[in-house]
Image (cartoon, rainbow, N blue to C red; front, side, top):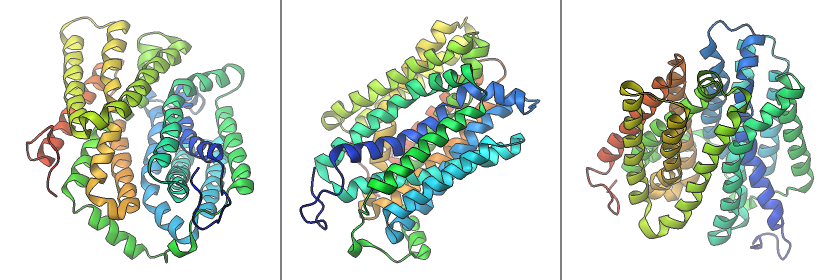
Length: 410
């Protein structure tokens, strides 16, 4: 592992310690979302919800909080240091999780979930910053890639893990699992994590300077265009997260084994993320993401036609939806990279702006799609067709009609 330039010959963290840090800082976000999916019916029943679609807000509240808070953690970590801000983030997450655990009504639970998302956003942002402090170039790419492979694998097992908890305990015990996980991570980091921000790189906390950076980010055509396109595209994914349990477990009658179907689809998405890492250097980000976006839109429109004019069954639904969602692995990472192309000089600020825009807007779009659920797959699939077409229109305008090219002027 690359030595830190300000630590002499001493390694601040071993290779596997750094990988573990990134795995947990990203994995706990996915666990917080996907473990809750099988618990939504029990939450709705226990807290007396009249409208079944309202239970989807348990996911939406977390996503909104996660998107909102990303604007804050970057400036704090650059001023106060990585370790205190990361530990503070985990402490807030633990408190928010306790709040969810004892929630006495649905509104209190939603507020706790909002706080959970806002707090754990710090782990995601600062974990990447620590990796950049200690490594660079291919070494950083290797470490982050290993963490992302685990992050993409979490949705494969998390719903089944949540279902396993429900077999032996009430839904509140899912928060106990998250509480234990976060507490263990906080204890380990408090003992083993050094401060990785060099003293000379510390910046005075000045939110006016941060606002100027965010404003500059939004002056770049590619940044704004691919952020908005990503927001619509992720809205389709969040719509799936919101309504997946109702569609698979109830509409198609899979019951508790719906988590296995979800796991299969998530595994296929993880495979295309791996394929993207192999193809992007040869084909380029624009060709891969724009071609995949067209494919996603065409498959979703075809799926809508099947629902409206033919007879859909579970096999057709899972087959077409999995094909569409597999293309996400060729879109999400490349959209992020394309948005960041013109803003490398303010990468941290721009990354936070991108996370905020895609997270909050995507969560709102996903909530609208989820709330339209009416014991039919049409609202979800039509919603994904709409988000795909909207994202394509934004990309087309951003690239001034020149698709599959080498780039566009700001």
